[in-house]
Image 1 (cartoon, rainbow, N blue to C red):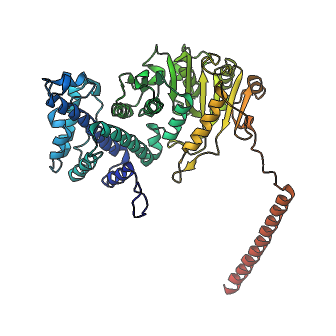
Image 2: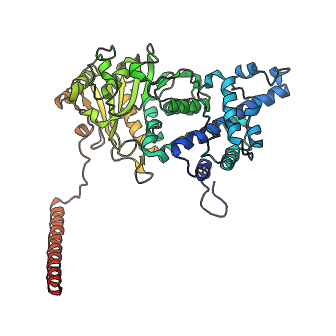
Image 3: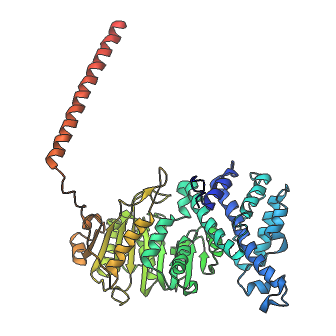
Length: 515
């Protein structure tokens, strides 16, 4: 909110908090510090939720009359984590100035895990390490303790959830390339979710990172006045540290994460949801993975459209997604742009089979620099098991191509993001093409609806630029004038080069004479 004096608006709370928390980082690497900070935000969240119910139980309100506020079953019945006395935020605040505060926080995390089976092995115990100064930790506890201070406990849960997600993104930026391993940029996640519109059903992400796809799906349902319980989430993650972040990220949003599984073998070798048929699959698998154990899976039942090459997992991921899609399910996922054209290892043949099977709905070419962990150009694929099911227009035999390479804006020298206007432009184009009441038309240089026959003519290459063409040039463009201008510029450069050569030659002669 702007101040009455006319000064510049104050920074949002989450930005102020980030700057303050980052100052306290000192010599700790961002990859380690994120667990320290996010663990404390999570602890504050579950403590707030516990204390809200504790106060009601203690007051004996309504149906809670006579209930014991220290009875764990009372909290379990309300889906609230039970927080033992020495793990409560009020206790940690009282210990904040003690040199043993790190030990106290680690013990608090242990106490909580012992009392709540779903959090076992999830919470960080990194607070007593020597590189974390007790004074800085005490200041960090004070800082996080002030988040949403004065708000009701239910309101503070929303604020803490928002801060947790914002900090995840900032830590990913701070880590750079490594940050991309656990975090998909929010604007990309928003675009995927807005395109698919997961109002109800099972949502699956077999490479779920820190759970951003699930959080955004829940936010989508809520923002469209839907019911959160209408969607259920399923996930898998092979990195245990990232899985812990996902479990905390979902818990702080009140999202059931019981079906978000971890094993270090990963989705290909150890599929944690073998029998799942999902209504929506939303994912950002790692690009061009070469060591995906493809040699051990040559005859796997998932490869219905062709055996993927052992040196690249892109087409293994596509077929893994399709294997888990329900009969009318839809998928939206990120892939390296090379997957649109590659023919190596039989990838071109698999792509042809996917087109001929009428599974590909839409391809979106993304701008460069959107992802933290790679400079490899990326694209979005939207696929559907049944494109004539009556929910939308019958798109059999058609594919929509969108070239969004010119969208997005820089947020720093290395990274771009999509604005809400960009997301709306892409999403509206897709929905107008897909929906029965849509008002779609091709736009030169941006979007084109192509028939399956046209795709076959272009040898099943799916690069949007091949279909949308070039944007129409301005009518007043004067080709002759442009050539004349370029010629004059070139001649001026030649003249300048000749002058420079003369000066160099004169200086060389002078050096010889002086010598």
